[in-house]
Image (cartoon, rainbow, N blue to C red):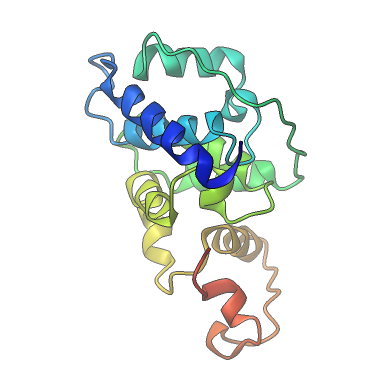
Length: 190
């Protein structure tokens, strides 16, 4: 059961996750609702992340015990190909984190892993919509969020940033505004 039929299940699971009491150390962490959305999305078979959100079993178990005690996760079995630029993406995210919450490191690992997916980043993360991804970026990586002033699609933006760190510029025009691929990078996401 994929697509819209899974939305009620996802919504119920999301609400249940947030209703569970969190450990005092993470109760005020704004990433709690974002993590709940990703977990609910993965359990509803949306997104591309492998089991444990790509964190590994031990780190995922720790995440659940702190943020959603008592929740037992059951995700569809899926594999995601590793990508050679994963470490570059992770470094970019960690270098630009807000330094407000320890969960930023978890989010950085999850986002870097989801970049291997084939859909928009918010979809690959299993989030409900792009606004959740924007919230995730502003909460965890505000410098990157500010740098994406043109509202470029996040995955394209992150790749552009790692390429520019290496001095690689692949845009066929000197400015995004005149590039023939402008709509692919800045158009609405469905």
